[in-house]
Image (cartoon, rainbow, N blue to C red):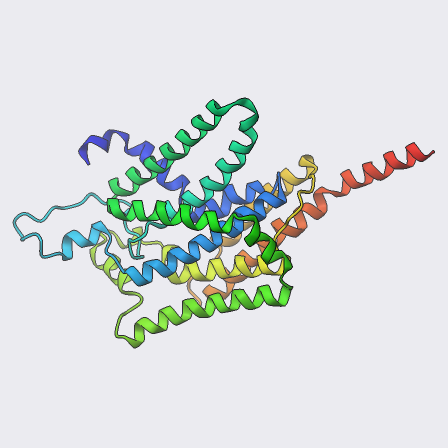
Length: 333
């Protein structure tokens, strides 16, 4: 750990940049400004990967290092290590598999797949460089998560493996075409069933005497500063956020055709929506009850995902469509 202390600022940037919350608020929406189809594929892959991560965390129920060292009987009071903590350490969800690595693996897999397809025309050397960058990014994220005491090595490895395997499935054209053939009601029904599955896992644990919020209690118990704890990193909050976004996706449906966007319109519009979402998330009502807190979170993520998939392409294509019609009229005249 001490060997990496001189790079702490850099590792902080890495772990913050690939935080699933940051990806969902900044980088992923920015893709919508350039390609609605790519945004659709990226969004679906990330959402389903995060859903799977939530289920696996509840099922595997593994400790995080920062509380494991205080709870385990492997050490005595004389030789028990004390891990360095900061605001990045105290996450209140189970540790395995790493959500940072699983989500980042999916996100980077989709982006680098697009870059590789574009780079093939320039030779295999470009593809090799891109893949090296991909693995390097995952390695740096893993180091940052272990340095801050968030994950063990095997939790990072499992996050990468599950991310790669599941993304191969969600990115397949057969899966995308299957979704496109479903009616809106059927897609919404699948999302509803997914939510029921998560509720089943939650209440199933209670039925067998396991507290689904045990990791939150561990985090509160062993986090040196309770202000480090962020409620948006709990599994229940993640489910609400993901469900809102996935319901919006089910309403619109997967985008199979690439529509050319007028970047002079789409980029400013997307940036404005991103800023509005940051403000909306910042004003989440935290002191008026759990029901209002979760309902607000659900609708914020649903509304903005719908906006990125429908409003941005609708408004960004106005000028280009009118220009095409004007050119056609000139040719006919």
